[in-house]
Length: 148
Image (cartoon, rainbow, N blue to C red):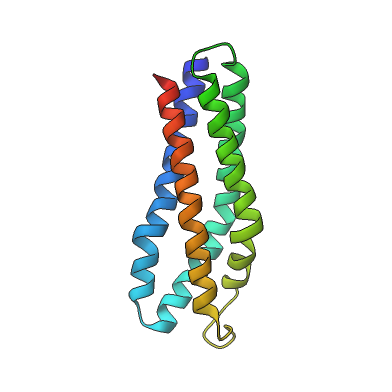
């Protein structure tokens, strides 16, 4: 049963990392290359869509890692799993404190009501997101290492 938990957790966290990596390095550059209104509308739509899914994914991933840490406490690699859990917890805190407030504003913007500094706010979100992606990649790497 522990092996199944390890694999399921690693796959779920890995797919989450892939989605967030894709947002940072594929989707955002595509949206940023579109004409101003189209790109901003795309960011707002993405904020609504992913803003609804990602909190469940982040908290669910953290819960799975916590379950793995508890179930595998006396197994080799437990320290790696605990450290991965701490990194995922950090990513949740970062999201709540830094990224979600910007996203909550962004998802309501239209070309008619967006603030003058909307690009600066999106750039700030991107910088925080890059750090969050690095944190969750580190957590995923630890989980993969703990499997061996």
